[in-house]
Image (cartoon, rainbow, N blue to C red; front, side, top):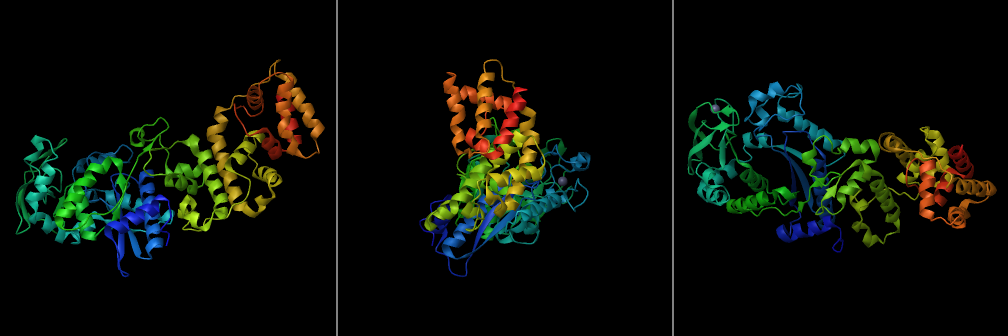
Length: 519
Ligand SMILES: [Zn+2]
């Protein structure tokens, strides 16, 4: 099934089958996404879970096999610095270098720093109905999920060391070990070092004598087993350990992790398992083409997007080619929403075999909602802009005039009205500059007014030619006339096509708008 589907989740599913298949009927195929709980979940987390879910669903549709998505949280990682955007930073500062799960919650409500972030992650993913199984790294280490893999890492200590140290700077090679003991005395993981590893006993001799930023180790030394959560492994080994221990078949990652993924794959192979299939995706950029992470605070969040547009439109945008860098900024919202709505309209007319090629097939598991109404986000935006009104009932009455099918899609249209009003208030209204028509333009405006008065009560479908005829009669280029027209009526340089504009607001409203502009 779906062997000829061309969209990327199906190509990924086919690549997964080729690499790890064929899967037996009782197989449980595992997909994984990673979350770093040093901060709150963000749009990167959201899009990685969404994209992995699309591949998983395509895979299930293609093979009929069972699959699950593990949302893995790196809560055994140490805290490297106090984030700028948390309350009570003084509560957290003394715990730098400790695992996130051993640091108190600065928000004061959960049992640890990472427990708070993990809860936020789950609430965030639940709100969008993602199906996943949460897995804490700390729980995995302490619960013994990794014990077998950790013993194997101890046994292959030198081979792994050789593999990684070849990629390190000379001065870092000497002290490197895959193991990072958690100091039983001070609780830190970034101040300890491995003095010796006994591969057979699966133990390490350690010393807590390193420095990490302003923090110095407590001087404690001893021997501990590598199992049971006494020790964690460093990042690239950690990724391989997860893949190995849980038998992960598929995981995607950001372009910045290509090199890590390559090394983790080699370690996973060394441990004796095939590394997962997966793609790397490009990062999100802001309006100026800068990495979003570098402009913290300015970037769009999932929550802010949802103030101005349906979340499905964000998913629609995230769906588009993940191998292409994407910009994310507020000004793009209207176009994205209309592209999304266009695809909803297109879906029922697409040949059944071509439907899985469309984003909305993936967004709605093959059954997108029907939408055949002419009202788009820009329709509503134009109307709000023209009327300058925030009266929902009034707007709705215009839209029903514009397309009678509005009634059959009331919930969608009402949602668009609400989002459009917010978008208008925050992004359109502040940039409006009305320009009164000067002596050059007045005669054209008056002709337009006269033409519309003559047309009152007549069908509006012939009116689109009116401004072109007037421009021609006055020897003016139509685009220049339109600019003057939109500056006078909407306070902006561009607007809807004249014909649709008249159709939307009606001839009499257009007449009063022109009268007001000329007054
Ligand atoms: Zn210590």
